[in-house]
Amino acid sequence: MTNVAPTNEAFNLVLLLDVSGSIEERMDFIRKAARDFLRTVSPQDRIAIISFRDDIQIISDFSTDRAMLSRKLDEIDAGGGTALYDALGYVLSNMMKQLRGERTAIVVMSDGDDNKSFVPFPAIVEALAESGALVYPLYVPSGLIPEGSVPKPEITIDPLRTRYLTLTTRADDEGRKLAAASGGVYYPIKRIDDLQKAYDDIVLQLRSAYTITYTSNSVSANPRVRVTTNRTGASVKLSPVVGVSP
View 1: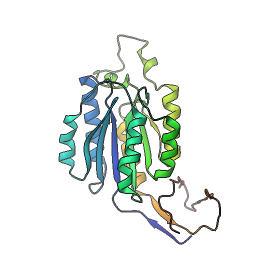
View 2: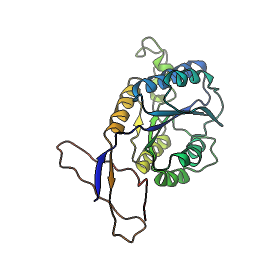
View 3: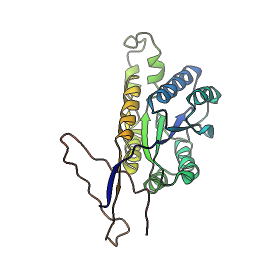
View 4: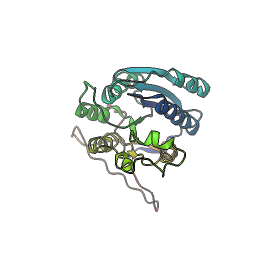
């Protein structure tokens, strides 16, 4: 071990928004959720916003101008299928190249049900492990958004509706795998209020991260690294290596 230091510099954050098949009611929710995220992160963090359906729309490149980012959210075009893994692939192959070695996180707001991507899921997992980016999937059941707009959501005309307010098994499984491959955290959203709790938790994690520099004597291409802490109640979650020197 050569150095352990708190990482206090600004983060690069990509906000990836699923706008597939969205009606105006859902778009209002997505814009509000995105603006809540903008208000939660630190002012120095640089944020890029990308929306996706069966294609990808760059709403804004990285910026700290919160007012501009908020205005840009009104430019989102909705509708179509869900090409989640194509969108992730675009971020990893195009946006991450200019940020190699910098602290970067990707926050995904979707229902997790990809039905249009050309890029296969295993390829995304492999690319994540090499990118150094942290991925935070915030998966919202599609039925939860209109449910949240009802004045008294506990009252519903359809007593069977609640059975549909869950994520599909595939979405849940793949969301966990994306987080695990990157060192991020998966958040299955069960209540509208869970979104803000997830935002707060993500910001706390990003602000309490450490950069560990070490010299390895291993000849293995993938040496095993174990990190422990002596602080009571603390836990350790590792992200992939982001830089290698000869």
